[in-house]
Length: 335
Image (cartoon, one colour):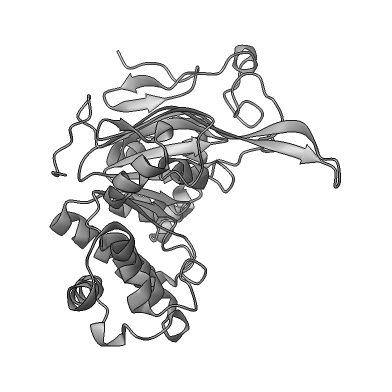
């Protein structure tokens, strides 16, 4: 496939109305369904070719489930996932196998995402064995190239994952994702399990590879400072819905949704004077359980701007300013 997007709206990936519900069951021998956990509830999102979109939110907001739906590790309950004109949500196993080389995933835990019984060479080459006819010396050379690309010495490819540090293991995961020359990589908090200094190395490597290879990323994180450094656009997720989406700089300079303001107020500033002058937004109330059916805005129980009508209708994700979408009745549209 070429690197230029050919989806109907020019996007590499376009998600429309995506929902992922899980049954809540009770009982040991005779299990019965007692409810539904709404992990993702009507998400719309686009990613352009070569673009990095950050996805942030608290734990349990549905970020990882969204990524697993996109890569079809989970079959969505409803919605569409357009990738280069094909709806991934409706593809069968054979069709998915054909398109999978063009999108890959990097998982959060570099200790759990690599098979401890396989050498690094076997781990990185496995996608090539599945999707191509490459074997023998040609396969070995491709593995060496992928390891060198992510800053690992190819001489160590016969070692096992336990012989590497956390940062090196995540580089192995990145090499495995890159070996098929994908166009989109979904990154599920790829640096959250690493030390801060190692985080910076991995993030800088990912930025360099994006520019060199023309990659697009969906970068999931709870650390907003990491997302700011890497992303062109940022989407904020709360209880399965996107509540704000904007170009990165605009969102950090002028957040509009009260939830986004609370998240950003919790990010420390390295300047002590500026940090002391800031006002912290402290949210009250409890996060509603995702397995309880809710009316109105999901954030209403914690929102400082809440009005009676907020509890009766779900606010749509609307354009409030140029390129800035917000799901809040109390945020006025720019004139």
